[in-house]
Length: 399
Image 1 (tube, one colour):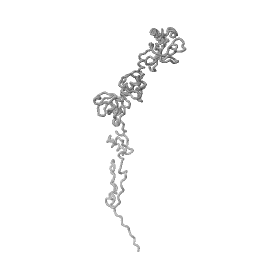
Image 2 (tube, rainbow, N blue to C red):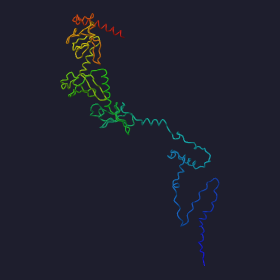
Image 3 (cartoon, rainbow, N blue to C red):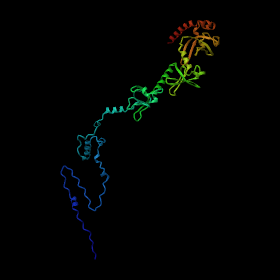
Image 4 (cartoon, rainbow, N blue to C red):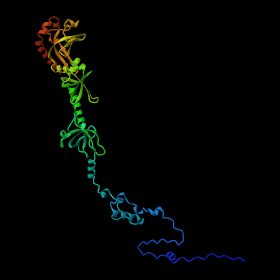
């Protein structure tokens, strides 16, 4: 006989669960119904699944907020934006805080912004000359106020062309100085400046101007080597080759002596300063001469195109066309080497070292030098006066 086995009868739910499953009464009008409590699993039932990341990190409160709101600019605006984000889509727009925020709401001050930019603008570019005031002196250098957010620093070796033994005595606080920027500002806003570099630049500029003008300057010989002698000029080291010395054979004896020199080369880029005593003597001699002046010299050389006349340290050219008004078959018909000659200066070119001489203007009639040279030379002074009048007329006619 088969016996049918019945399963266990279903158990009635606990009273608490039955109450939870009962229908909740409706919420009063105009108020949001409270969320029903989450049902608790019966005893012995498996644990509920863990909450998801979306439940743990609910960012709905921050929707619609700007960066300024997140930084705490306006807490009330944050709450209003959060409420606006959670409001129904069909809620009416408007309200005092519904308009987008403008720049003015952040209290932006354009003048203050531009002033802050000016205060932090870099001061001094490399090679720029600045005026400043000494504000501090240390053992390794000087601090100079140049108008930046930090003072400029001048290392001790850049304080002057020479050696400075006492910085505090040389640069008292409050002293006005001019400096050259040698390095732009670092991370701290400090600029490196130099009084020495500025002095060197000014020295080179001055010497280039003296070279352009063909000036003669005095220097003291400070040393010598096989090639020549050295000297100091405007804080720069100059060199005079032996070939440019009047006493080149005994140049060692010139140390300590003062001589007049002029410029052969002035090059700041290569730092070359080459001088010449011989050229200075020529320049000094040129300074004593003028167009129309009667000079006397000695025939130093005879060339096919004319005679070179030694005028005492410099030479002038008596061109064959300026010797006599008559045609000459040979220049030796008039003058011999070593003979003394008087002539008028008709052209001077100190830059090229050229002097043009003339004896035609001393002749009473063309060819007089060929037949009465001694008379012409003896009366050269009087004849030169008449010749100068003629030269002035020619200059006026030429404009």
